Image 1 (cartoon, rainbow, N blue to C red):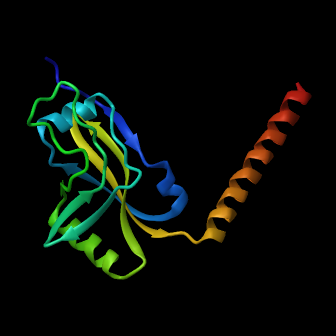
Image 2 (image 1 turned 90 degrees about the horizontal axis):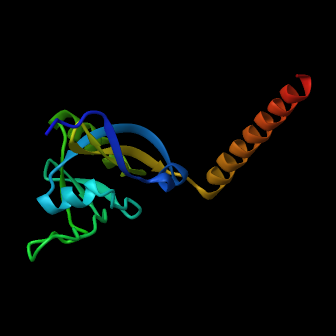
Length: 158
């Protein structure tokens, strides 16, 4: 069987970009069991409540929902469990120092397969206040209206 190439996205956390200001992003590998990998290959996962943390010099991903594999047997995995993340020691130290500062958290943005290996994109992020969210929505809406007006003018000129 030929090896997989490219990137296949399994799940994204779109709400994270709305609720947080992203400072840095990191790519981390995941330590998974066989049934978790099979369930992910079916495209089934949810990052909505997920978060990551550093404990004892190791990075962990918690509360990410990977449902049980349909054809799994009695040794199926629990859907929500703590999963170890694979990062370089320097990256773990950098993330730990940043999150220890206060106000920063570690949020999973995307769960995907890169060349056949399960990866998660993590972001060191700071929570947005309610008025920041409204301002971002307003800016996005204004840009959309401006683009619409420009495209409308182009169509009239032709």
